[in-house]
Image (cartoon, rainbow, N blue to C red; front, side):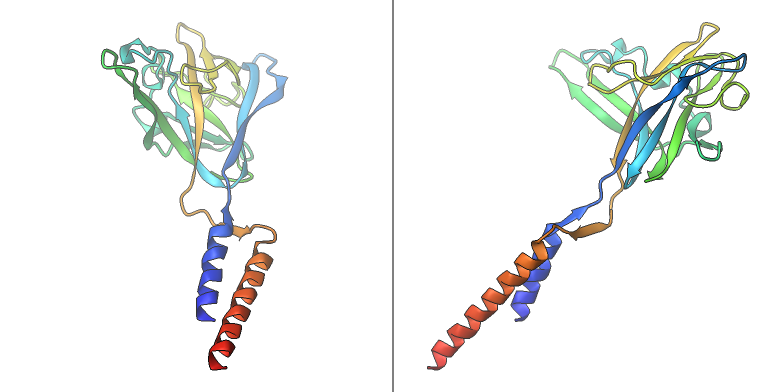
Length: 235
């Protein structure tokens, strides 16, 4: 009986499912207007399921030469300090600095004659289902601040040189979807991707439908077979 219970417990563990980390970029349906507005449509990141980290990621336009990538975040935005970029809680309007740790999302050398090309992601923070955030950055040139949300009435998020937003501007050479913040005064645009990584140690979900009944039935059959075998041995 003990062996049956152990087998049942192990089977239940293997039949369990883990919560996924799901999120999406959502574009506003209302364009900016008025003297204090930023042109284009605001966009946010909405987390719909699970818990995980969200990263802002380099644009890679050249898979053969690292020096050929002229629009990396570290070249266009000030990524030297977590106080220079981060996220905005849409529900409260509160501005937060980024967590700042980095990870690599692409790291490949096409052949021995080409450079090793690396795509870096910078962690904004950890978020859970129900969270909705915007992204803010500081430009490397002139130190202008711009965000994917709100307007120029919030100078701490959108400086006067913040010009335009675009939620979707195609993909880079790695297939990463790109987003845009554009600035006037010769600063130009910052393009970036977004990536999510589920947090480790996510809670185990419920067994798949019917799994428990099937396993219990299997245990009962095994138990009955064992009892029948013992009766035969006694006879």
